[in-house]
Length: 253
Image (tube, helix red, strand yellow):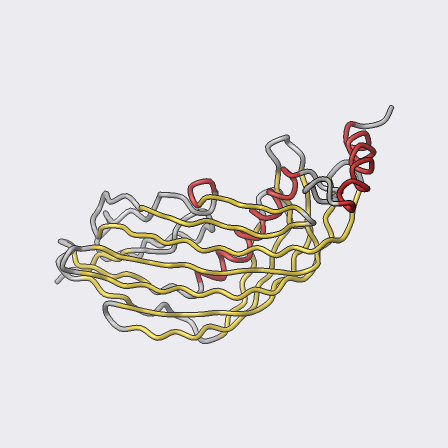
């Protein structure tokens, strides 16, 4: 018995001639749209977002939040990190960071490469798809702190591109295709214990011939959660790529 995927692929071949003739805008892709969207989210969550983490300093405040400042994180101008993918596999990243900052503003950029090893995610249709191959990325983060209104404003911009092998679990089917995604998200939040993060923007790109477009609110690695500020003297940054990268350290004095 032919699988649903095989039937879908045969149907897709029937539309290929129409696509070439310009009678339809559907791309000739062996991936479904949902699978392409999952690949884009993997690129955002396991490559672009962790690289952006490397470009962001700590936000340090006193107990009453009457004073805050950006402080550079420990580490040097180069980094290597490995990210666990949602359904197994890893993404190993290496890159460089160039940062300028003072108490109330910062600007930082990073570029480098990633090596995906069976980095897998799950679609809404419960299909697990894994990626293997090399990827190049470049990211920039810009932030300002306004103590007058106790607000922090952050813009995170980044992209990743490369030729990746994708494989559908349990079916043994694999192909190589081009992936190119770009993230542009603006955040703002009040410096307080219970502030909510307001964000705008999203992620767009091309994955294996499919056009992908996400609103920031729909990206799992762009959540509204941020770190608890309740432990005086403790650095509360969470290293999970599902959280924003703005941590607050409460300091006495």
